[in-house]
Length: 93
Image (cartoon, rainbow, N blue to C red; front, side):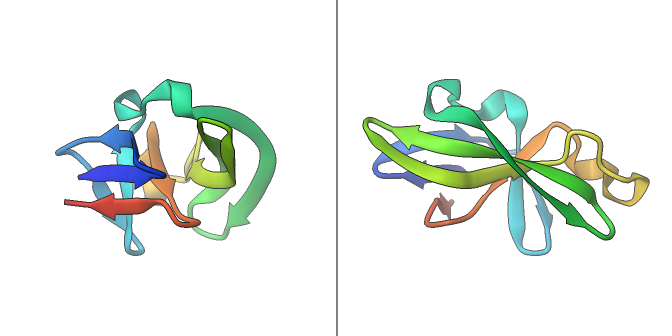
């Protein structure tokens, strides 16, 4: 699987975990030059607190387009150290 935005490969892995229709990529598969920390957080009743990353390609920024659970609940342990995408990021085979 590949996560892409604006022609850039953000992450690529044969080892994604699908939860609620979202592919969670291993954090180690991210091309770190395309990410910066965001102050945005949300809470999922069963996964826990999500932290967000901005996706940056050239001069373009897709705010909060990637998220992860730094300390997921026991029910969501399979997504620990993994990142998912939305907001126009294409996840393709």
